[in-house]
Length: 187
Image (cartoon, rainbow, N blue to C red; front, side):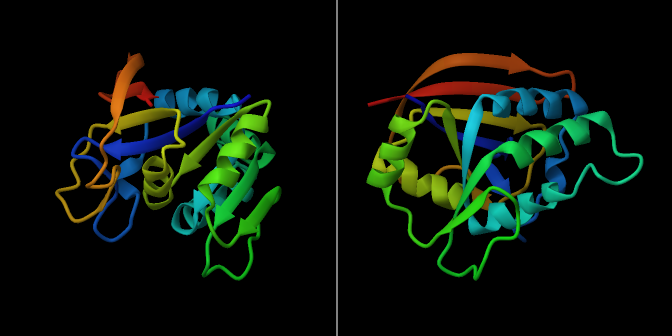
């Protein structure tokens, strides 16, 4: 039986993207990148909303270019190996390997998939994660906080109406000032 984890990179002021939907501020150090790769190695399936999928799809070819770092190549290999489910009513198709397009997010179906899995599942994208959190199907939250302030107007990591009890399971500090916090969601 797997668990469903909302794994997210966040600014210190609680945003997943800047006011233009950008992630330029989210340039994590190599140490943080290696750590995230390690977390994702235990995952078998990644659930994405449209916007995050479009941002992450570059990993389909990233790392193949001459001069790519070993860290980049390693993460690309992990990303390509995962099953990806993209929830979108507006995308016409998906263009990456091991990727399925699903039109609607059904929390009960996702919970059944996670419970039947022999690996963990991550949900990514603050909008999709808000639906999963609201439905009460998220087991853990993995929050990588980068030392950056967005200044408002971006996409918040958590919905404004989130009302969850959490238990801290793990924490880690990185040399660049980033922090990882892992919480169990109290049901």
